[in-house]
Image (tube, rainbow, N blue to C red; front, side):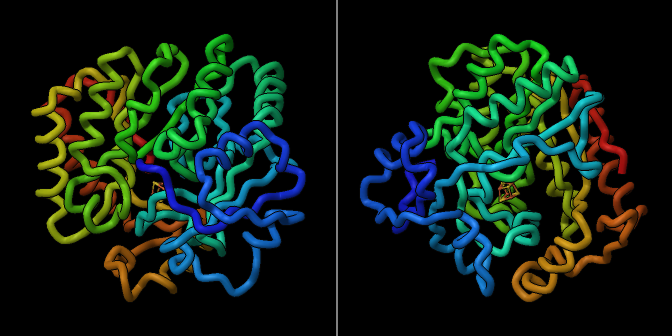
Length: 333
Ligand code: SF4
């Protein structure tokens, strides 16, 4: 992803002297910098329009004060790990997927980068000492690898994890930015997870993300130099023509000879926290066909009806089973 063009950067006074702040500002010399007391003044302002701001987002550099780790959600797979956590190094994402839950979670489409990364490292170290082993997802609420060329967080976390084999990191992306990790020796305890979708989904519902073919090329490059890679076909979406689209996706993966070289393939159908869903559907019903389906609510989350989920997962499972010996991990749905 090329360097973004932020017209304005809001900078918290307390974040002014951080080395990360200096690095980022040096890469974005044309942006106008405005000092603020607290990022919430801008980010949590009432009356904002998420999608309007996504067209021309502003950047906010801030210090996170607390909650450096969150318990993993029941809606996300834990891959058999007992201690599944994630962190929020960045709020919001450079991409703009129609189904993204962030548009229901935040009122602002602006991007916040927390620059006090040492506080995140310290909290992670403490949790690791307490639990002995930690599975930590770094890029759930954003796409760190997509932003690597100007924030560099992926590499910093890899170096942090290098001497901590019981810290298992997952870095999830829809970018094609494997190149950003060049020069960084692979470690066993990091898994690069590529979310893959059929071409038609990328084009229609995953705006600004890398194309499917570019993601596959990046994945192959990562495997070639020794990184562990996980394929996430998640969320699987229900739309007219989904059978052919997902069969084609599996076909493309088989042709690229990547299926048996990845660590895992994770499957999951669309699901979302109910409150976020209600907010998003209200705003997106007229401009995204994804929200016109039938949905059901189960334990505070929104899903496709069970029969539809089974059809989607079975179809993928059958196609993949024919083409691959990979260790497929099925989300319980
Ligand atoms: S890549 Fe993920 S975090 Fe980013 S917009 Fe898409 S769904 Fe949201």
